[in-house]
Amino acid sequence: MWFIAISILLLLASILPYTPLTHWFYRVFEFGKIQIFILQITALVLSFILIDESYFWLCILQLLTLLSIVSHTVALYKYTSFYKSIQKEPCDTSSEKITVLSANVFQENKEHEKFIALIAKYNPDIFLTMESDENWEKALSVLEDDYKHSVKVALNNTYGMHLYSKFKIIKHRVHHFVADDLPSIEAKISTPDNFEFTFFAVHPPPSPTEEENSKERDGELLSIAKKIKKTPTPA
Image 1 (tube, rainbow, N blue to C red):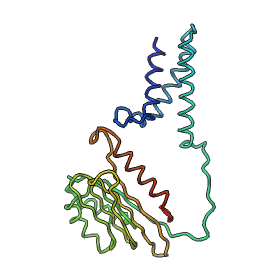
Image 2 (cartoon, one colour):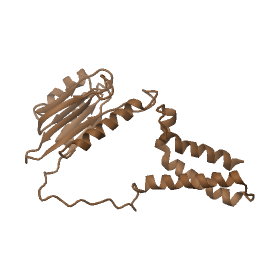
Image 3 (cartoon, one colour):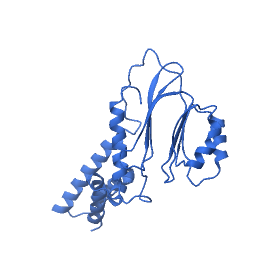
Image 4 (cartoon, rainbow, N blue to C red):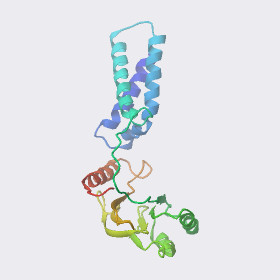
């Protein structure tokens, strides 16, 4: 029966991302939660309209599909306009607005001048490049008169990073949470009006195009999250 086949497939797609399996075959369904949610609602409604007979396994699958829909609803609700986030009381004092620009410049891209023109156009207080190697580092050196503070991690494996700031970088650290060739940057920055915050920059392995599993991505993001949680300054 069509409903049995579809509901089982959608239930598997809903459950697999929660398993400890890290291969992208299992994790890719994380990115289709909305689509799975809509398909499950459609399949459940049609099962009541089009299927006249009722038997044990059909009822079980309908119940499991309903529970899965509820689970997706809970997960997606906070991203809707109906969700009211908790508003924190404003501080008595706060820093001026800070502008940040981040860009994956693509390591093999040789059109350095276009990115430099982009920086000149938007004039951010801080900018971060990802996939930047030694060639990009040399090209970006023309900006160092305006961006006197920087953290440079030039790599040729598409995971190089360069952080440039008009504000003082009090201290910084380059982390390698999951692999020696996967850096992330932690920088404590002070604004001209003497407010301090911590800037975290991360570029984990993105997709099945580069890694067979999501272990490094998950480890990198989890490590950053733990660092942010323990950071006393805004981050």
